[in-house]
Amino acid sequence: MNVVVVSNRVARAKPDEPLAGGLAAALLPMVRDSGAIWVGSSGHTGDAAQTHDSFAKVEALGSGALATVDMPAKHYRGYYEGFANSALWPALHSRPDLIHVTADDYTSYREINAFMARALLRFNKPDAVFWIQDYHFFMLGAELRQLGVDRPLGFFLHTPWAERRTMSAVPRCADLADAMLAYDLIGFQTVEDRQNFEDYLKAELCLNVVDGMVASHWGFTQLATFPIGIDVEEFSARATKAIGRPEVARLRDSLRGAKLALGVDRLDYSKGLANRIRAFDRMFEMEPALKRSVSLLQVAVPSRGNIKAYRELKSELAALVGEVNGRHGEVDWMPIRYLNKAFSQLTLAGFYRVASVGLVTPLHDGMNLVAKEYVAAQNPFDPGVLVLSSFAGAAKELDAALLINPHDIDGMARQIAIALKMSVEERRERWQAMVRKLKAASVQTWFADFLRTLSDIRRTPLRAAARPIVLELASRRAANNH
Image 1 (cartoon, helix red, strand yellow):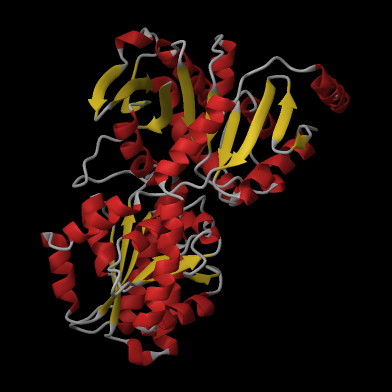
Image 2 (cartoon, rainbow, N blue to C red; image 1 turned 90 degrees about the vertical axis):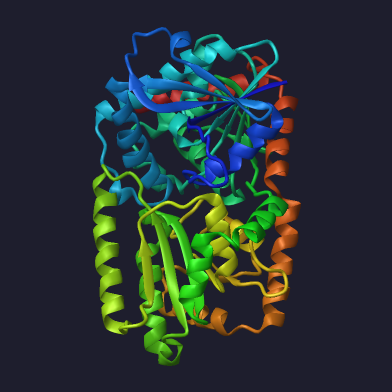
């Protein structure tokens, strides 16, 4: 089996170099160890008139390989900043109020999906299996089918899939969902995400889903849940090694015996950063005795700075941190240390190890691997406490964390205070329960389970039993158009 993994971007980073997000962190070791080919954007744009073989660059990555393409300059911005991240991302994260998109952006999204499909033809071997990643390429499977590719096609959504009315706010969403059914297998992080997608298919496309299987004019598509994990042993070893790194040592020394609460996120409105800072502020109002005993280090990695919502968020957070520090800070202590920069996986592992409390409080998240990395990085004899949003996919597994509602500022403040005071016995008990679950659902298990399921699926023509569904769909659409 020749596995071709496709995402918007690829990662070349070593442990001492920054990685751009959870998808990259998860896929990099899997491609390196499995022998897969990972295809994505080079980060550069070029002339779409070039032939694809002339600009696809292939380089070794362990036993696997990376292949990058220069995306068409004419369409990349409309595809990435426009439709993908100003329509799909806000809707998927239940923020339809932030949708700002044009018809040209949708055209660019389709053009880039079609462009990538043509680029992938060089990898269309008799034993190829294509595994497409995330919301950037909802329509890639349909484009590949239209080019005659009949190999197994899988798709995995790293983000949530929001409820039906929210997704309906995305222009042309029904066309996107229809195109997604060209995939043989669609994977989701949680059961709720899969059910939301099924509800959308039933209500908007008039398609029935039976035991996770849906029939459409493309054929049959299996819908399933594959919660993504991490390599617990590798990350634990990385954290142990990182504790002696200069940046980590300086952080630990600077605390002067105080505890550290840590947040590590992309600078994104879905991460609940403003509410997290407000909760930390509220905690000092509720329990003044905690002042000087703890500081919050918030790492907010810059993201999508050309999009208005992200620029506004950056300004809001900077002002909010200034207000909290001005209200509670003293000449030799500040409650919040706020950094707009990226750190390597190795350095972050050391930060996790030092932190007494890990704050992972998104308003809506597909999984959130930071939560899992924080748990894996802990000292088994003196572990920290994970404070986790119940709206993160990780909460379905890590239910031994202190679960919070990120909209409840007072509730979050109380849970942070509880975490800071928790006994070592309770911390060990909670940590052990979470580590057991992480080891049972590792990234290796996620990778193998998805590919095994995809390999077992054999694409078949639309069976006679499914034809009435398709005919009924066509009839209803025709009626709706009159």
